[in-house]
Every structure is written in structure tokens, then in C-alpha cells.
Length: 466
Ligand code: MN
Ligand code: MN
Image (tube, rainbow, N blue to C red; front, side, top):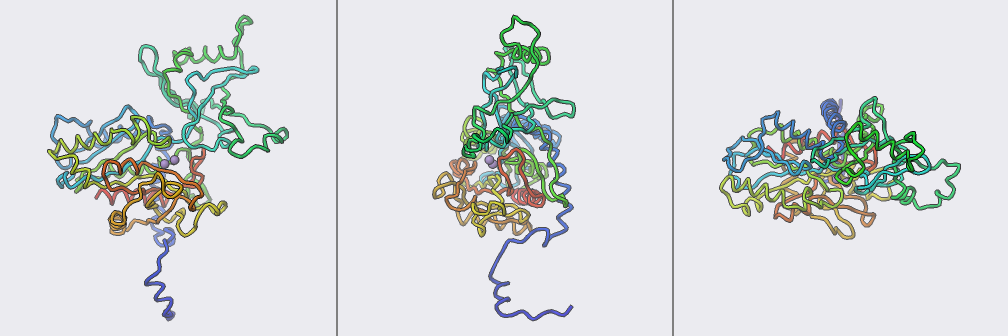
């Protein structure tokens, strides 16, 4: 084919200007690899709907790959693999590197908690011949999205004798599910006048769990008693045991491919398991790295990284301190030289709601992993804001490994905002930047991501560890 002569302006444009390419246009060979990677990811989402389930999954995978529980009494050498678990709800994994640990560790931190409806500590009641659970939502949800969808019950109850009952109801084909009702349009005239944020109110997020009474006229609340009878027969618990429980009600749907081309994944809990899974896979694939790796799968990000299983706690600081001491290094030196990818999602540009995005600085589906220099709200408040030097370092790592990446802000200025674990990593005097997958309908019961972006997020995490 004869080459068309390029104009001077076109040449300049090619030399100087930049726009982030669509991966399928530039690297169509990645489509199949991304499809394949997504199969493992969808399985992970199917079996991991709570932070505890993620920790169990990760621990099993790490043990199978030859990881051992970290033992401060042992001295580890390059190539040794260890992990540590924080209270069953957060997990840390490490391969010791060939370089001196004083040169710092490479950290990749994702969170494994997702927005959901938690049961209240005294959840059970009946009203007009229906039995219900009361809930208190966890994380930033849009409440109206949680009515009229099938819900599954996950979590633990600790009995009086400290034995643990694990719940996972609503995931198997034959299981029942649970549901929050909403009004029919015929009678919703008054409800329609409410603001969207109050479409369903917090105290209206009540879950239907039964409708048949215990057959005894002497019982004042026979619908409630019938449910207690079933719970006691099946799980050996009583009403009082709910005070010793963490029960999470989550969407009962399974992950699905979206689109005729099957290019997207639709599922609950992708924020931030869409980063947690590639992070875990990158950790498992890393053998004999230069820098010691620390993969963090943490809890409580969705409510501000609070509590002793969230990043605001010292558990990660302590773990890295132990690693440093194990290698005879001053932890302060290790922190100062360490680098971290705060692996979290960003909002993908949504053409239907374009006004909340600034299109030149938004992230787009299928344009790769998003490098988010800062998050925050009202002038970057609550952000970490990575330095130009650290941005250069991370971009160089990705460019050298031919990872498709893009920049992204979390929406237009003053359209809203949010935070990640980055600010808490930065508190340890570690260089950190947010890097993750763009998501449509973030925090909804069914979130949307691109398989090509997920695959490139995995490639980014691998490159960072190599
Ligand atoms: Mn997140
Ligand atoms: Mn989130």
C-alpha cells in the first residue's frame, strides 16, 4: 500500500501529542488472554463475597504455592515465602527478595471488604405476619438499588461456647434467598416525591425472611418464633447469639459476562476484589524478586480503613517491622525506601452521566489500569497525592513492561470525591500511588469492569514485583 505523505502538523501531532489508546485496537492479541484471566477472576468473585471468604481463599492459594505462616523465630532468605493473617479479615503475603531489605519493600495493597447490608445486633422482628431482619448498611451504598434484588446471607455467629457457625445461604441453586420489598408504581406517588437518596431509607432496608407462623395460638409472635425454631434446628443458635455475630447480606447473583462480545464482567463486590484478585495472582506468580514483596488484602476500607483490621491500624506497620528485624535491618530505613501501589478502583467514564466527569482526565473502560495521582474531595482533602518523582518511577516500570495504563481523576472537580488506603500507607513514610481498574456503577449491587483492564492491572502488579 502506498504511504500517504504526512503533513508537517500531523508529524508534530504524532511526535508531541498523546492520548491513551483502546487496548483492543492496539493489542487485539490481549483479548483472548484477558478472557482467560477473567474466568479465574469470576470464580474468585463467586466464592469470595466477604473479607473472611477472601482471606480463606487467599490462604489456601498461598499454602498451595508453598507459603508458610511468618515465624519471627526463623531467619528467612531470598526466595522464601511467608504470609500472616490479621483476625481472619486481612492477609499479608511476602516473597523475600535478593536485594537487601534496607533498599525497601514493594507493596501492593487492595481491600477485600465491599459495600453491603450488615445485620443489626438484634435483627429479628415480625410485622403483620411477615418475619424480617433489620440491617445497617456498610459503606457508601445508594440505598434504592438494594430493594427487590435477591440477597444472600454470609458471615459468622460465635456461640456462647465460642464455637463458630459459618453462614453462606443463597448461593447454591437449591438455596432460598432473601429480599427487601419496594412499592409498586401504582402506589408510589408519594414515595416518588422523595429525593433519590431517600428512595429507600436506612430503616426501610428490612429483609423478608419468612411468612409462616409457628402453629401455637399462645405464642405472641409466632412468625418470629418459627424463624428462631428453624435457625436453632439448622444452626444451633438462639436469638441472643446475634449479639456475637457478623452477618453480611450481599447480592445473591453470580458474576456474568456482559455484552455480545463478552468484553465486560458484571458482578457484586468488584470494588475492590477486581484489584485484590490480580494482586494475589501477581504475588503467587512472583518467584525470586529483587525487592521483598508485601501483598496486602485489607479490611474496612469502605468505612474509612478504621478498626484493627483496617489500614489505619498498625498491623501492616508491625508486619513490615518484623520483616525488617528478621533481616537485621532498621525498620525506619525500610519504610523510607519502600514503594506501594494502593490497588483500588476508580470511576470509569460513563457516557450516560457525562456531566460528573471531566473527560480529559477521566479513566475509560478498555484503556488499561488507571494511575490515580490523587483522590480526595474539596481540593484533594483526604488524598495522598503522589509526587512527580514517584509517578515517574511507576510509569517507567509499566512502560518497560508494556502495560496499558491511563491516568484518571475521580470525577470532575467538586463533583464529589472519595479516598483510598493510600493516605494511611503514606503515614508510614512510604511512597504510594493509587493504581487499579476503572469501574462503572461502582458500589452498586452489580458493578461493571473490562476484562482487558483487569488483565493489564495484573500485568502492572507483576511488573512492579519483578
Ligand atoms: Mn475501593
Ligand atoms: Mn469503594
